Length: 224
Length: 224
DNA sequence: ATCCATTTTGGAGCAGCGCTCCAAACGGTG
DNA sequence: CACCGTTTGGAGCGCTGCTCCAAAATGGAT
Picture 1 (spheres, each protein chain N blue to C red):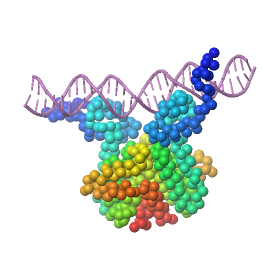
Picture 2: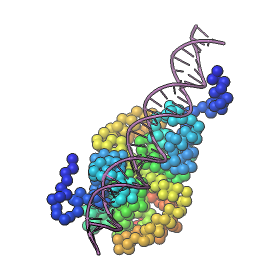
Picture 3: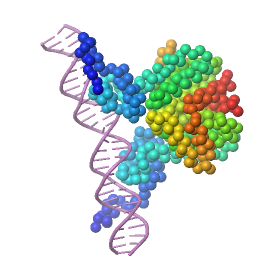
Picture 4: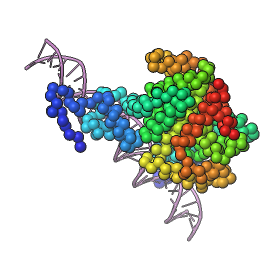
């Protein structure tokens, strides 16, 4: 008796069945639209028109969901990169892929630097390691060199996330903001930062990031 | 429990009077004892035997409190460092000071990498900049080199925090933990990470961190 | 077609969070 | 003494992640 009633009442049967993938997909959309703080279980239930129990049946907890979303984004970013042959170019390409991914998905950068043992970072580290090997870095030094590159990349990813947290949508506004603050610092205590403040507005994060990569690569070359 | 010695001193304010400093001090104690997640307004009110209103009268919000605590810890760590003359040694000393500070106060590393425009990071960046200048790095390259060093240091600080989050008290247990996980990875997909897993337990973060700094310094030398 | 075991769903409710707001207590000044 | 700005403690709001459970859908076996 209630069978017919509920079928007509509650829309139609779920052709759009819930699944882990659909949940992760929705999570990414929410994250991209509103940043880390926008992803709440309740926002998910609203977007997927379901309840909290249904979601927790497919996903263990919020953290796992964030990790899955990050893994998705990073895996996507890394696919374009596998084909590069020259080790130096490949390392640059990997780094840039992560940079671009964490630039357009700052929440991924945050998660990446917060929980680096997750599959997302494993992918990055493995790729870096292979190309370091191909570059001729001796066994003993591979770990150290990979760690240096990895930590630098993770650091920048975290900074991308921090910047986005400060000004979610206007990218250059952040630089102007910080430049304005630093320009008003005590000239005796912070001469360098005031000088840097002048260069901030006209500087490009992406190319500066690459300069850092090249700096480390140059350092690695000296230990070959 | 707290003992009240307010009456003993004549004519003075309550000995246990609330103040921004006392609050920050208590916050640091809570953070050191229980990590980032332990610092809640309610935990503060309990420790200081007061109410939330009293605390918010001295401190704007949680974030400002974390920033103040971090600034405190970093400022302390940097005092030992100002005297080093040789630029290379000074940069190493700064980096190590930050590493050690974020190693014994992982929450500070987390805050540092999450909000790098706060005074704590300003101090670090300014010091790095000065010594880069002393090293003879040309004007144009100072910003890039400082950024590379800063991002690397921030990245490692974030990793220290992440490791502490995973295993709050047992430092080496984290490495064994991760090594065990990585050792079970698919050998075809992650050959390098398995190889790294073997080196993990016997490796020292601190010296590896320094190797990274030296790598960047070596790279900087090539652009002099 | 009917029954049942299993999976999947939706939501009420809990404990905890940061924070606001306000009445009361305090302390210096006339 | 009265006055008034400062400081205090706590009730309460809206939000969070998450648990738990009853109900609904599903997929055989009969």
